[in-house]
Amino acid sequence: MNRILRTGAVVGLLLLANVASGRDEAMPPDERPDAQPRRDTDQSVREAKAFTEWAAVEARLWKLTLENDDRTVATDQKAPVLNWSWSDNGRYYGNVHVFTAHGRPVAIVKYFEWFSPIEGVFFQCTSLTNVPLTATRDGQEIWAPRNNNVVMRDVPDAPAPAVTPAARLVQMRRIAEVFKVELDDKRGTEAYTTRQLRLMSRPIFRYGDKEGEVVDGALFAYAVSADPGALLILEAVRSKNDVRWQFGFPRAWSFSGRAEYAGQRVWEIEEVNLRADPKSNFYLNALPRTAK
Image 1 (tube, rainbow, N blue to C red):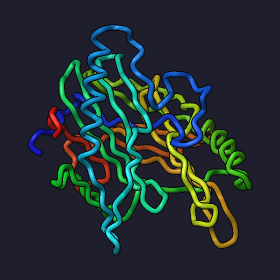
Image 2: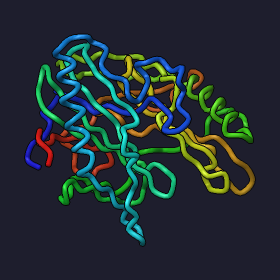
Image 3: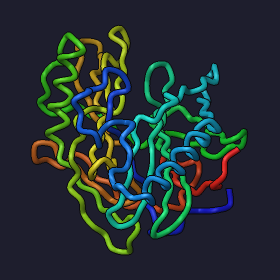
Image 4: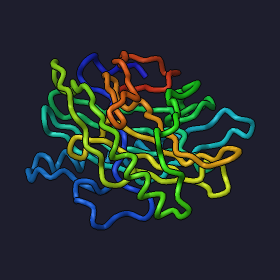
């Protein structure tokens, strides 16, 4: 791949709006995975349609393989777990795919397209596993992270995970509501804007095994409108003597950000170079406009 996203033009975004199963039909329209841009102009309709058609073809070109003993091929959920549009200081459209292996998320891959103030199609990848993996696009290696950047920690003063999935979902929502997340945004501009992100009402993805190490887990998104700026992983993790809640924030943005829990700083990231190494756990780059 010979084109790199130019500095300061576009940043990595992330992560997510709806549960992959058990969706909330009462969810606000702009938080549904199939939400379309709400700007009722011929231009936005054409742009959204062009992006959707391109992204559907692009997603089929990708394959992620874990470099473990059995060379596990990660499973894409096929349909994106989130679609969004952005029209604040530019126009672009994107979606998010979650790849899983053995029932757990191992990577997030996002495809998006800018129409203004720059033009182009791009991808962004975030590893969620310490097992090295290789991503290929149309048979050619495009990303090969060696580990992840997620630090899992116990949720302070959290209750014991409830017995039923429904009750655990209520607990996860309440925990997610306590986090306050802000990110520095420079998309489409040369100036930073610090944004206070809001928690989207449903997790993007839910997983778990009542007999396994992770009894229950979910990915939550914090966003501006329906555009995800940060992700939160919440898991009910089994140890020798109990099950407890843990959290982690994977990098979902190339700029700096931070989060507090009950008034205490629990997560902070510095800005990273968009021209990152394709073997890094967070990677963003340009793509050809036409996919086979």
